[in-house]
Length: 449
Ligand SMILES: [Zn+2]
Image 1 (cartoon, protein in one colour):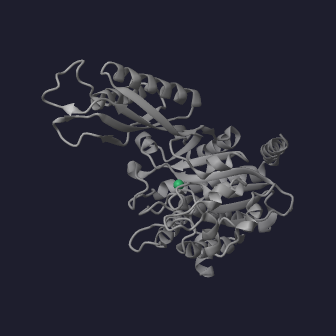
Image 2: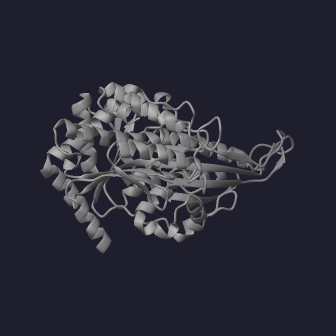
Image 3: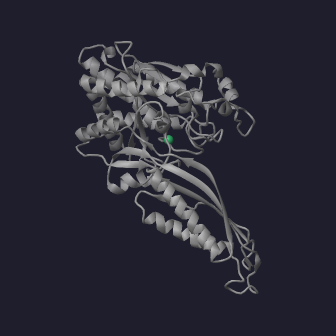
């Protein structure tokens, strides 16, 4: 194993990309549901995942451990114990019947980047510990929110926000988050030790786009400028159920479905005309059970996302006004509730620019900025330290599906970009000092604020 690992580390970059893909596919075989890839928070299958990824971390020269939230942590130390630390990570859990790359790719790529840095140090005949910064790779235990209907348990733990309420949440069989941690052989009381090291100055996440934009633009890579804020609501249109044949059209008819239908059309029209806005009525339910009954009640969900919170809020206000309008003309009323009102999370412009420059130098193409419509661990980590995300094109825009894939050339480009990013920080000490110094200063200010 060690022999073949060593060979692979020294292989050309196309082979190294193939090896990253093979490792993701190997992890996809580790599952709690035979015949598919399903790994929820700290299910027993996660032991095998940690054993595999942990062995790759150790072979790469990292020390590794599991923290009390079940995150797998590998650290390549710097020569100076007080050196700043760069964190690279993503998640190891999956949705039900998942693909092989969502989350996992970011962890496997992180380990591969450490291998590359160690290899370059060896080639230059200097010790692996010669880097002026430490690298920590984190495989988060939970991002998808499948088991406890709350996402980001792993990343919340490392910023100290896995609170008592969350620890008391229970899954479908009545097991609490705290008990799930104990059942996995870990100790919830040790959660404070899971906090990011004080020296951590930046977080980098490699993730598949999970959408069709980069493929449509013919781009292998994209730099995430922000994770879109989102609003989720439910609208209830209320009219009067009645006979479809005997109730004339016009003022004697109060059709809740017709009011909602006009509103749904306006949601699509408005979003089509507003750059960067996505608005979706995804789930509807009519009270009418028969074709000859006017709907007295109609329930519809609304999901609105945009990178700028003010645009999202203005759009939501318009959709509320429009729903009331559609009702007024028909004598129907509308009630609404908001279940999620989540602010947009901008990524760090310094780290993103550095990542973009690294991608431009290695791929000879300037990757576009792209807004992430989905949440990622980076948006949680960004509450504590600057974060950046590199997206890889998703063939067919497909994700959360067994056919989810990546192109080997795109993985090669992402690996080369990551290596170039790390080389810049390694070789340009002034740049490292600026970026790390600014981040650590801001963190101290926030802690004291
Ligand atoms: Zn993911």
